Structures are given as structure tokens and as C-alpha cells.
Image (cartoon, rainbow over all chains, first blue to last red; front, side, top):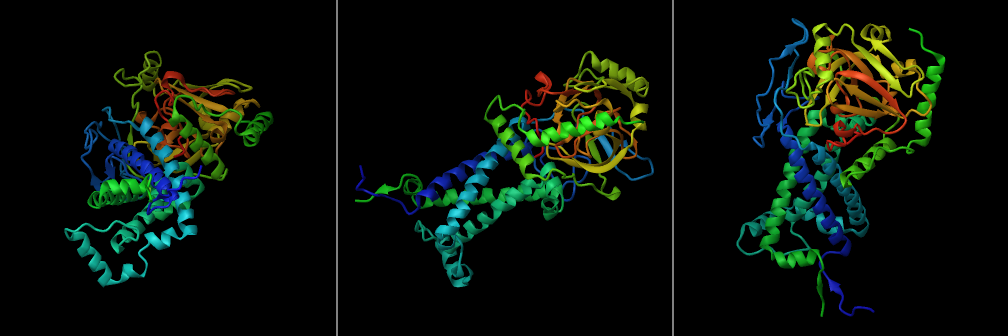
Length: 249
Length: 250
């Protein structure tokens, strides 16, 4: 039986489906990623880094922050190169048994649905039409008007079509996802054995890890702004538009 | 040290068999959905990564300070993986600078035997400066010296059906790798680190280095190597029971 009332939504059916697959993947990746990061909340630049080398950032998240459980260091070659080794004497917080496997499971979902999204956005023109900033994105007057509209009290009109700020946000997050995947793969000992350029792209294992964290922070910021804007523009209407749509009469 | 031709041929047969029939005996997918993800990730890597891939080797100047984690003293009964039978044995051997220690090689090999440190030192050595990548998130670059595992296995004579190599230690930990990684040219049984004998905390007197996987696969404090035809998950003290992926290429 054919439904006379067509389901309507500003978003194509495939956009809605892939949106939620990506949202689920990002949520699980963020959760498991934070669990993994809590085990060693120190970040470094360069080829390698650990508790005996200098960190550029240490985040006070969880019990492993600046834990002091180290035996006095051992010097490998007295008078030679100054590298040391210290044995850990304390048990640390570590849930990586499940957190890592969960992270990679969600990463497969991200890569799979991300590829579907990229291909469909390309062939339907959704990407160029709705998501990328286009020429308006570089017009100062248009950008300035959109900034003022966002700062003002009146609600921004829900799209599509989207304003230039929103398009810039989408463009940045679309670029961030491949960076996230590549910097993640650059931390893999086996992937980088097969494809060393992935490692060199970031300048080493710990640089890749730092880029992975910073890009995560950028995507997390996008998600927060995205959710705030959904709340500002009629959350029920927006949720409905991104799920079942509504019936046209 | 003479290498038997038959051993080398058997080794090639085992390696070749693996390349042809790769999926005959997979690591387990039992347990939960995470294990299935691990299985998928393992196979994806084996399919997409060139078979001759070598881990990056660094220069002397890239060597960094490092840390020793997990079991750092198998003789200490406060360690999480303390083994009440083998731990005190290790302490006695360590007190004698490992005189009398020998690595047992058993299972699916033609000539099971014991390899003393002196015997292992007479094998051709390989020195490599590689990155230890810990699942915790840190990494360290060190110089490792040892004998390629392949040479020891071929000396013992790998049986045609052999598919996995299991490592038993002086603590309760045990782990295994597939024959592909066991025969990898960078997989070595290391007795030297940064120009010195392997320090206690890093697995003295002998540890394995599996450079294409995460640090926890480079098992320390080796006592026995068991070549197996069937997959052995290591029971209560294997990675799988502990929740960790058996294959840790990523």
C-alpha cells in the first residue's frame, strides 16, 4: 500500500541514517578514547616519549596523573649517552583491555559510515551544495553578518540552506575526521611498518598522538557547538527532521 | 653453530603453509563483540599490510630514556603476576647472574632442547634500534641485541603443522604469536639492550621483541617456548582472559 502522505524532512534519508551512525561512532570513540588517554595523560612531540622524558602537556585526569611510583633510575652506559630507565613500582589505572578494542570497533563504524557519507555527498552534490562554505564563505560582509546573527538574541533559522559559519564548521570537521584516522593509524606499530609515510606525515609516534588528541579536542568542540545550536533552533523540530521527518498534508 | 637443512626446509614449509591457508585456524572470536572486532582488525591488517613490512629502525641518536613496567622483578611476591614456583627460581638465577639458566624449546619441533645463554650468544646476532609502543600510550626507542627467533626455531626444526609460538615466563604471564610474526626477521630473542646486558626490569636474561606489535607482545623473562599447532589462549593469564586483544598490531 502506498502512503499518500510523503515523509518530509530537510535532510535526505541517507543523510539521516549516516548522521546517526557517525554520531554513535563519535560518541563511543570519545568515551573509549578518554578511557585510553587516562592511562597515560601525558603528551609529547617527536618520535617517542614516556615518563622519563619531557611532556608538553600533562592533564590532571584520573589517578595516573603524576603518579610517583618509580624506582631510582638506572643508567645504561655511565659516561655514554645519558638515557635512563626506571622501573614502575605502583599499580596504575588501566582499562585498556576493553577500551582499546571498543575504540577500534567504533573506528571501523566511523570509517565505514564516513566512506558512505563521503561517496554519497560527492555524487548527490550534498557536500558542495550544503556543507562547504563556497564563495560566500570568503566574503567578509557575509561572514560578519552571520557572526552577528549568531551572537544576537533571535534564533538562527534552521537549515539547510546553512549560513557560512555553519558551513565552515562542517568543512573543518570534515577535514578533521581523516586527520583523526591517519594520526590514529600512525600510532600503530604494524600499519606504520607497512606504510611508514603515515608515521612521517606527523613526525613520529608521539607527535601523531598529540595531533590525535588536539584533533579530538577540535571535534569535541564542534559537537558541543552543534548541540548548543540544536537547542537554540528548536530541538524537537531538529530531532524530528534528523530522524523520522514529518508528514506533509 | 650448524643449521640443519631439514630444519630450514620445515620452516619454509610452515611459513608457506601459513601464506596459502592463512585462515585455517584463527585466533578466537569467542567472548564478546569486542573479540569479533579484534578478529576483524587482525585480518584486515594481515590483508592490507605488505608481507615484507619491517618496523622503522632508528639511529643511535634517536634512543630515548625508557621505563620498565608490568613485572619488573619476578622474584618479588608483591608483583601482580608473581608465580610462586617460578618466581623464586628466577631470583636464584638472578643472584648467580643467570648462570645455569636455559631456554627450553618444546612442542611441534623436531628436536626439543635447552638453549643456554652461551649457546644463544653463538647464534648470529641481530641489533636493531626500534620503538617500543606501549598500549598505555607511551613509547621509547632502544637498541636491542639478540638472536632472530627464526634461527632458534629452525635449529629446533619446525614441524610442518606448527602455526603458533607460545612464550612461557618466570611470572604468570604467557602469550603467543602466529608463525608469520615468529619468522619475521625483526622478531628476536633479545639478551642485550642499549649496549648492556638486558636489565632485570626489562626481562633478564631473555625477552622476545615483536616489533610489529604493541609492547605487551614482547614478553619478558623467558623460560620456555612452546611451538603449537592449535591456538592456545594462555588460559587465565593470557591476554584474552585479561580482556586484551591477542593480536596487537594497532
